[in-house]
Image 1: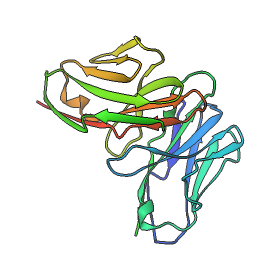
Image 2: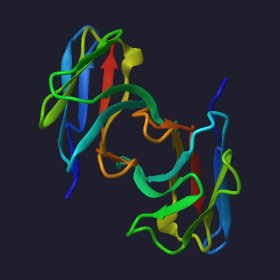
Image 3: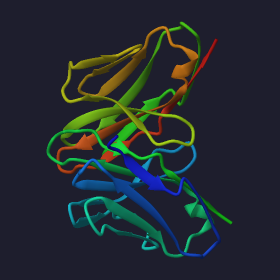
Image 4: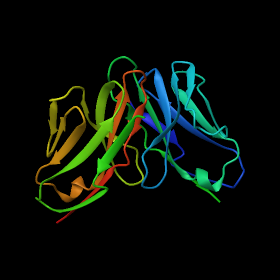
Length: 113
Length: 110
């Protein structure tokens, strides 16, 4: 089945130790998003790619970076995780211009010790 | 500022007790309003998209409606398996990213 796959499902890192989360999709969607969701809060958009064009939200900390080497894959890099970065990270994809709803992966739950 | 507000934050129902969840929004140029279901520890699962005031969509025990200022998710005769957090989100005409509300956590007991 076509889908959005996030790895790993659970990630534990140490304070200040760089970590990379990955997302892959078989939907051939041209837009990919990264959202951060803390407990009992709304998902918050960090950035998104429209094809190869990177769009950063104004309030996304510089500590968060992203790479999209091809249509299928997208990575979220957290350069120096702090305790406040512990959250669920959600990857989503959509096809721009069609009105289609973004399709979400299962998320990566990040813990920072 | 674009904003999505959902109420109530939490709702407890008995099995078979129908109710409605509310999503009010302010957004410059609504491109679409989306409802998702989210189970604990999982990503949001798409339920409905509504594009214009007056539009309604149904799926099993769920029915979503849209006005110019708010949307309702009506749950008819809910079952325990309907227990989840229901998220509302809007897309602006200027961009593609969704703006989410905090969600309503629904608990249905038998």
